[in-house]
Length: 215
Image (cartoon, rainbow, N blue to C red; front, side):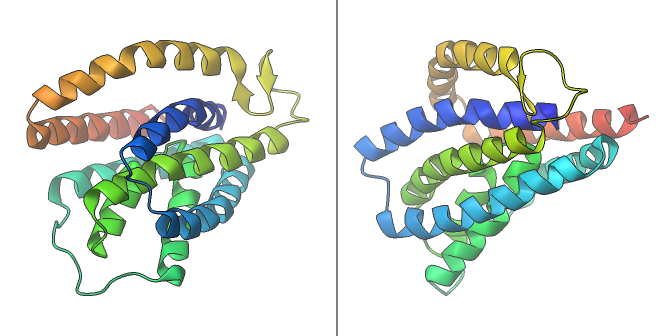
């Protein structure tokens, strides 16, 4: 829970930076982000509370399985769009599901939101912009609930704010702000299809390591 909560807390700053860039590029569709964000706020709250209420071992197993599923989707996921556009209820539903899973895993949610929106014929740039903005909502509501749920826990390390371990939060934010531009530039030069497969393989290895490492 500490790792998940701390990871979410770092997404707030990175999400703000990303969303700001997409706003300048006119990639934020107000209709999409409004209804998605509403659902995400609910889902992230439920996901954080669920993650805080179960044992660390169970959470680790759930996390490992979800990471493998995301990796498989990245490699084998269909790129075909459905024949239907999406309405307010559908956007809210995507938000709730995405928010729950992201708060449970401590991630921003781009790997989930983008393919879901593209399936319903949302332009890829708008889908990515929505994912960037939605990451902020996931991070804020998820982090806040992890702080509340862990507030009176006596077993947490020093310098913790609930389940959020502040030294790691500030350290990751500080270094990621320096290295993210480098990664973005490299990402523009590399073959994205191969990069996606390499990243998916890395996720599977991490998941296997987590499953094997469970006591």
